[in-house]
Length: 235
Ligand SMILES: *Cc1c(COP(=O)(O)O)cnc(C)c1O
Image 1 (spheres, rainbow, N blue to C red):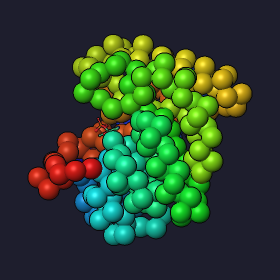
Image 2: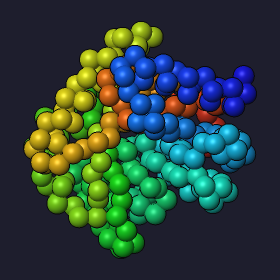
Image 3: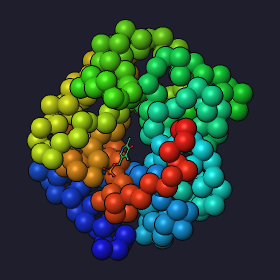
Image 4: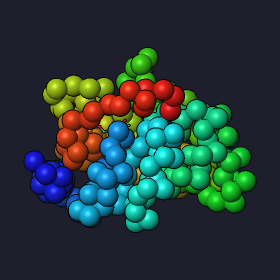
C-alpha cells in the first residue's frame, strides 16, 4: 500500500471512530510519527498533505528537519534528556513528552534564552509500567501548580503511551483514566486543558472514543519501521 492509500485508510478510521461518539473528525489532529523515516519519505508525506510530524530522538530530528519542507511542523514525543533541551526547544513546536518538573525547568530556561514560548503536554505513565517514562498520575496533581509557574511553557494537556495489547479494548481504561486525570488537572488550574494525545496505529479508534484530540500514527502510515543501527545511540 502506498503512503497515500494508508493515509486515506487512517483518515477513514478516524472518521468512523468520530461518528460512533458524535465527534467532529476535525477535532482530532493526526501526527505522522516519522521516527526512522528518511527526509525523502517525509517529503512524500508532505505531498500527501501531512504537515505534523512526531519524532522521538533529538539528534535524528536535528539532522532531518533542515532537509524537510518548511511546511512541516515537529512535535517531540520521546524521552527528552535535559542536555538535549536546548535543541529540542528550538526544533519543536510542541514537546508532548515532558515527564518531570526538572525537565520542565530546563525547557523553561532554554525557551527563555530563545525568547519563545513552547507548547507542552505532560506525559503520564497511567499504567505505572516500569519500562516507561512519564508522570505518576497522582504526582501530576501535586506538581501541577509548580509546573504552571514555568512562564515560557504553555501547558495544553496530557499525553500517554498505552501498554501494547493486541486487543485495543484492553487499553480503553488507560485512555479513560488519562481523560479523567486531565479533567481533574483542568479543575485544579481553573483553566481548560484541551489536548489529550493518546492512540497509535493499533488503538486509535478506542482513544478517539475516549476523547483523544491528538493521535500519533507511525506504522499505519509509513509501514513497519526499519530501525537504523545508528539511531540506537542516545535520544
Ligand atoms: C513510535 C511511536 C508512536 C507510533 O507508533 P505506531 O504504533 O507505529 O503508530 C506513537 N507514539 C510514540 C510516543 C511513539 O514512540
